[in-house]
Image 1 (cartoon, rainbow, N blue to C red):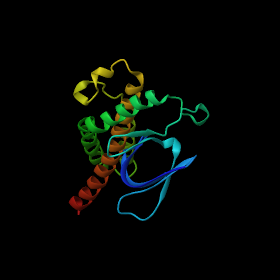
Image 2 (spheres, rainbow, N blue to C red):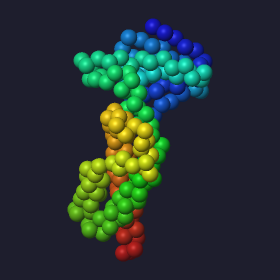
Image 3 (cartoon, rainbow, N blue to C red):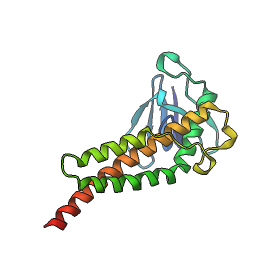
Image 4 (cartoon, one colour):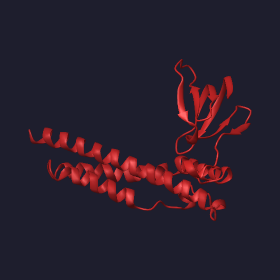
Length: 188
């Protein structure tokens, strides 16, 4: 068990954004932490945390490769996977926003199709957007120096696809609601 008080450390998570904590305790199966300015302690499974980084840029890796827990990657491979996710989170935003704009238009058009067929536009567009493959180009934030690294590619692709799917679903649903309200007000 390890404690840290008032450190303003950063928890580097797998599949989520990193965040700052001012207190943490490493236990065998979980990590308890507290966010700055909060009094409540929260616990997260240890398998969801890769490392804890201090303000002095010292990093303590808590990730353990364990195939019984579906942690197939080594720590070095997981670091590349997380780098790919972070690059997608930072640079794939423009492409995801374009997909969301098209989703908003599709949802708005779908609202004109009626109460039964309209939601099919939302569901259909979200499915198509989620089924499309992410773009692995430098223009969209893919780091060419990792071109042959399958773990970086997997992390980048997973996060890019997740961003596109979520934003297209939210935007298509919002477009449908705005279109339905606008159409109702227009017809009255």
